[in-house]
Amino acid sequence: DGGITQSPKYLFRKEGQNVTLSCEQNLNHDAMYWYRQDPGQGLRLIYYSQIVNDFQKGDIAEGYSVSREKKESFPLTVTSAQKNPTAFYLCASSFGTGVGQPQHFGDGTRLSIL
Amino acid sequence: AQRVTQPEKLLSVFKGAPVELKCNYSYSGSPELFWYVQYSRQRLQLLLRHISRESIKGFTADLNKGETSFHLKKPFAQEEDSAMYYCALSLVQGAQKLVFGQGTRLTINP
Image (cartoon, rainbow over all chains, first blue to last red; front, side, top):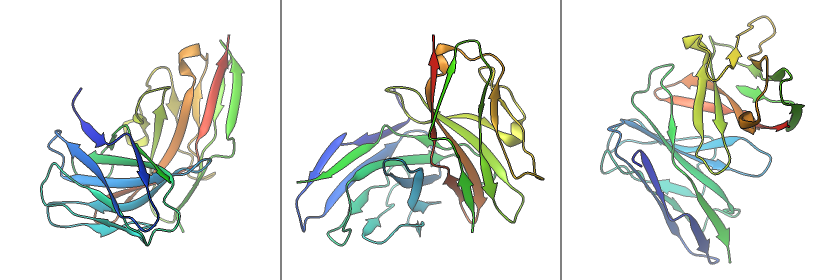
C-alpha cells in the first residue's frame, strides 16, 4: 500500500526530549504538510512545504521544526519547547498547490508524554 | 479570520433516512471547500470537493455563498456511511492550506 507512510505509529517522549516523526511519500507530490489533531478539534496546520529546501510555518508552529531535504521526505521534530505535545499527528501531501488539489493523508503518529 | 464550523459533534440517523451534515465557513475571499471522511481504521481521505460538483457514494454538497454553508447530504443513509466527516476550506496562499472544521461523527443505526 503506497502513498504516504508515517512512522512510528506510537511514540513516547520524556520531559525535555526532542522526538522526530517520519513522513515519506512515493506519490511524487511537490507539497507536504503536517497537522496536529486534538480530541474534539479539527486538524490544525503546523508546517507545510511547497518544494524541496523550502517550508513555511502554519498556524501552530511554535515548539516544532521541520526539514525538506528530499522531495519524498518531510520529518517533523517536536522539541522540548512544545509544552503540550500529546496529540495525534497527521502528514499529508498534494500534487500541486493550486486550488482544488486534494491532500492525501498518512495513518498518523500518536505522541504521548511519559 | 478564516474559520470552518461544524455545529454537530455527533449525528445519529437510521438506515434509509436522509442525512445532512452541516458546515458553515467564514472567509472573505472566494471559497474552495472540501469534505474529507475517515472510516474506522482507515486514513483520512477526500470525499468530494466543491469545484467538481460531483456525487460520491451518493453524497452531494452545494456551496451556498449567501448562507456561507457547504452542507453534506445523502438522501438514503447506509450503514457503511458511519464515519468521521470533516469539512475543510482551502486557502491558496503560496500553498494550498486547509482550514478544517471540528468534525462530525456520523453513526447510521440499523
